[in-house]
Picture 1 (cartoon, rainbow over the protein chains, first blue to last red):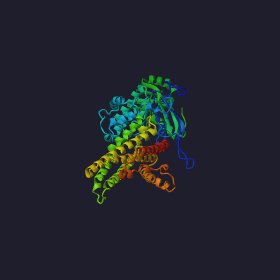
Picture 2: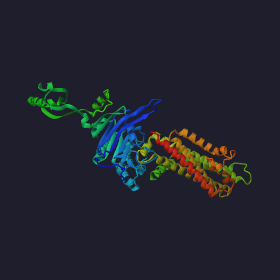
Picture 3: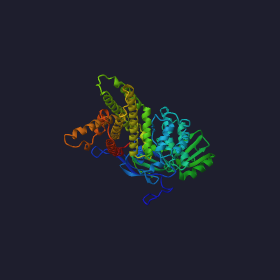
Amino acid sequence: MSASQPVVTPQTPAIVIEHARKGYGSAAVGRKDAVSDVSITVSRGAIHGLLGPNGAGKTTTLKMLLGLVRPTSGRFEILGRPASAAGTRSKLGFLPEQPYFPTQLQAAEALRLYGQLAGLTKSMIAEQTPLLLEKVGLEGKETQSLSRFSRGMLQRLGLAQALLGSPEVVVLDEPASGLDPVGQRDIRNLMLELRTQGTSILLSSHQLSEIEAVCDEVTILNRGMVAAVGHIDDLLNVEGQASIRARGGNELPAGVRPYVTQTAVSGGVWVLSVAKSDVRGVVDAFDDAGWTLDSVTPKRDSLEDYFTRLLETPEAGGVIQ
Amino acid sequence: MNKVLAIGSAVVADAIRRKVVWVVVVFAALLAFAIPTLPSYGVGVVEGVYKEVVIALMFAAAFVVTLALAATRIPSEVERRTVFNVLSRDVRRWQYLLGTWFGIVVVSGAALVALTAISVAAAAVVYHAALIELFAATFAVWLEMGVISAFAIMMSTRMGSVTSIVGATAFAFIGHSLGSLFAGASGVPRWYVPSLDVFNVIDPVAYGTGYGIGYALGMVGAFLAWSALLMLIATVMFEGRDL
């Protein structure tokens, strides 16, 4: 290794994007930024979600990382090396949104082509093709023409080609797009399996439930800027609030009512929101009334609620954490 | 180099499956067999006329095949976004362009060889003559198609298929006119004027004794110089394009 090459350690982030910017147009006709200032760090072995409404700059950011769009400015690194440097992207797999393939090819031929482009030998491609097709639920489809593939099958094949060569970093743009619920579950399980194997994943998705289910960290973009970033628990836990589930009656005990900030009841189970400082008093009041406590947990928003609320705030372009 | 060859192989496979090459070659072959039915060949020149028409036919057929592939490949790949799966990998844009060009050159070469073989066979049947010198013209037309495909690829890195076809056609026409326009009257030696006329070997092949090894090397030199220059410009143009 030469002195000029960066030292890559296991702690080196899988992906670093710093102050990415992409502007279109010129000063004369009016300049417009698709991405104004986006910074993302994906830790090794983590699944990092990238969220944002349409036009937030998610796909443009990914394309800049992958060399498909020339950035106006910013720093892009994959495994500690500049993303544009020769050899860097050999360790990366990419699933584009709604992947397209030359439809005259068969599934195995497509994987052979992309395997060759990934620098794999013939024997490696021959070995990996059936395994990957099985992994994405396309076993036995090796010789089927892609012109006869459904959209969901093409999506699965897109995932298979992204995983050729066992890349250390995978970028997935809307991986569940076009898949039925079973397919979406399969993709989710596959992402979790990849994380277990140490693969780092940058996942761009509109499906908040998918992000919430698999991601360790999220970055939320809005209008070309980072609106929020952090660990998903940190973002969704409501500061200073706890959630209590209890059973025991049709009306809340009188000793509990003064502490409750929100309440919901379903099937005899009450779910209450209370200030963390009041938890002890509420628990005692339930005990005195003879109720059963199911759980006491930090109050957590759904990602959908958090996302909606965040984008409705006027300062949604600012960094929360 | 493996990546360039992989992309080239994909172009060849795509061309075979799209049947463009077959249709053009079969149509041209039918025409080749029809040439001897044309009346009024003068005594002693009939084979020369046959060869001249065959060379013109080869040029036209190869031109159609080349433009059908070179002017449409990149716009189509960008529009269908199949290019994402290629360029998001560790594949440089110049490798993608070179592979595409390489594949098209192979396809046009194969089409030309097939067409020439059919024409030679037709001549053997009709005139009982082995006109294998036609392969010398095949080589020249093939080299020129390499240059024209490089130009079409260069244009298609930034423009649509139709514009690229029109541009490449104009390039071929002007390319053949340059020598006549600037050489001769101005006293400039023809070889100093960059033109496509160097690939025009109708006279020596149809009515002469062909061309020598020196001339062949000159054509190869012109082919390499034109192609390298155009592919370099294509790379610069494509490098700056957002996909």
